[in-house]
Length: 164
Image (cartoon, rainbow, N blue to C red; front, top):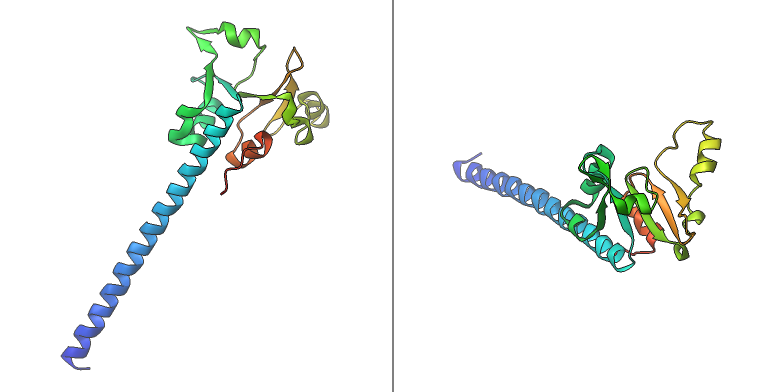
């Protein structure tokens, strides 16, 4: 192989490696941008439908729920239940005992997707239900879904489209 051919081969390899690096990081940035857009779209939609998250910033499940939304969490209608080591009045009035708890208007028919917490407890023989379950509010107007919920499931429960 001549010196000229070696240089040509080195340039081709260098360009291929550089192209691969750009493709990898460019694709990763695109995926991150799409994820942020999904988070933001869902947060806006939940806000527009008056879906509320009740939580306790000192509980790891609430923090886990916040992390699922990333920066878009600022658009979530969030009520902090833990105030000065006591439960807030708003959470007491709503009978929120476990966090995180999402409230959905009854018209969304959450019962089509989930077991009630009572059914879940019976089916699991008294063990805590995996993931989440629902209860109906005292006034019968809302569903309380207790537990950490991923973006896709929240999208389905709320009838908010996040994939466009």
